[in-house]
Image 1 (spheres, rainbow, N blue to C red):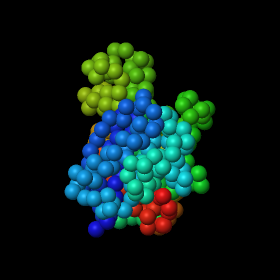
Image 2: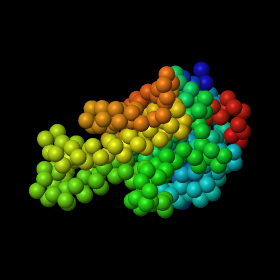
Image 3: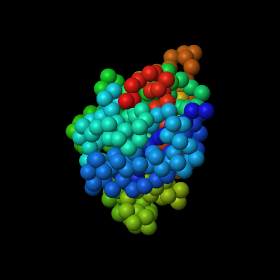
Image 4: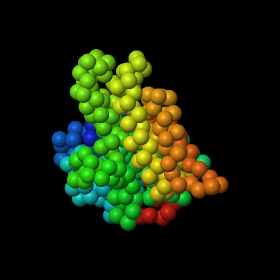
Amino acid sequence: MAYYVGIDLGGTNIKTGVVDSEGNLINKIKIKTHAERTMEEIIHDMGQTALDVIKDAGLEVSDISAIGIGSPGTPDNLSGVLVYSSNLPFNMAPMRKLIREVVDLPVYIDNDANCAAMAEAVAGAAKGTKDSVTITLGTGVGAGVIVNGRIYSGFNQAGSEFGHTVLVSGGIQCKCGRKGCFEQYASASALARMTKEAADEDPNSLLTEVIAEQGAPNAKAAFIAMRRGDKKAEEVIDKYTDYLADGLANAINTFMPEVLVVGGGVCNEGDPLLIPMREKTMSRPYFGPGVPKTEIRLAQMGNDAGIVGAAMMGMTCVLDNIDGK
């Protein structure tokens, strides 16, 4: 059995695990990133966690085939450099070189959303398929595309940014510089904003009361109020699922994946979100008569997706004879 180390680098935590070639997570550890530090200090800790998790698994460094890293931002896997990350003090960070100074193994780097998609493809909701798309609804909208069992990220490894495709021309300003981006209408943050706007329109609505109970507008408030019979909240959810369905249908039309995986905390709301999301989404792609249709599934890998996906990305790079040295 071959083993791989997966490192999920985030602005808050560094999560590291040993994963076998079937996508099974053997063990994992988590440490704080302390993003205020220099990139050299952070990357050194990443290498050290790899050594620690290998030891804790009862393995030797020689038992590990490669290290895979999932990071926010834009990687250059060929050179082993993290070109840029908005959440970390990294700019042209020589990640492969610095990690190999700590642990001498091949090192591969990819975007964290791509790694999450790989985890779902190998061991999660899209297991057994060759072509899948994973969309994550969080502060923004993350997306990862798997084509023929491999991550697709364009010629510059900056592709699959579905969150920054325009859904509403001239719409809400996005941090990327464009207006009307998908994530401004379909992220959990967008739902929280829409909920506050609706409550501001009718301060006496149940929405206002629920927001006060929650302490601030969030992605849960409209669902809570809707379950209590509030019509204003129902309108918010209807509008939100319309926007979400349009964006998901665009993703299906672009790649026609066998499975579209949807994840993120907002999916925990269950049927009040999932039923209209599926019904609206599947009524919009251009399948044509008799054409097999994409299946929409919920993400299964949860908080381990980054670790498992990074490790599996490392495995595919090894299989493809990409030089990780």
